[in-house]
Amino acid sequence: MNKDTSLEKIMTVLTVLEYPDKRLRKVAEPITEFTDALQTQIDDMLDTMYDENGLGLAATQVDYHHRLVVMDFSEEHDKPLVFINPEFEVLDDEANECQEGCLSVPGFYEHIYRAAKVKVKALDRHGKPFELDVDQLMAVCVQHEIDHLDGKLMVDYLSPLKRNRIKTKLEKAHKLALKEG
Ligand code: NI
Image (cartoon, rainbow, N blue to C red; front, top):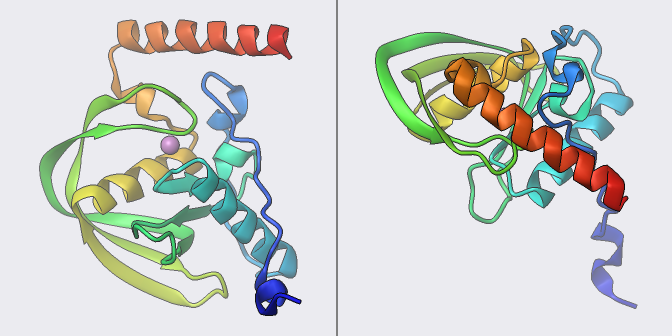
């Protein structure tokens, strides 16, 4: 018998909603109870994020409309960060331009301006409050993921022309995927 068997866990990969799915526009509700079901939801979201090779994932993207975000910036995928009811304040509003991608807008990478440095306040997976000052890529990610909880997407920062072009391409891809079933 393999000694490590007891450590193995079954991966659960959730479906990530894709733009222009209307469910991505719902505003998520604050989390008030730290139940076993919530712990499972957090683990499933981490599995999903790792499977999709994302740096961050917001609950809204997996059709769970509560204020929960997961991230991991480590190469080994072994430093998961969980943010419950996250809020941020801008520490340095010098605009930082970054090429952003989103699992809900697959295949598109767009230049977007965000605040360069922010302070995040959130609860951990057990409801304990913490604060974190973040800059660079992590500051971008925090702002991007909190946007998701408010029903906002990176395409909202683009010109209507660009946004429509992305919408048309993704709708076409979704129709094709349905046909090929
Ligand atoms: Ni995203």
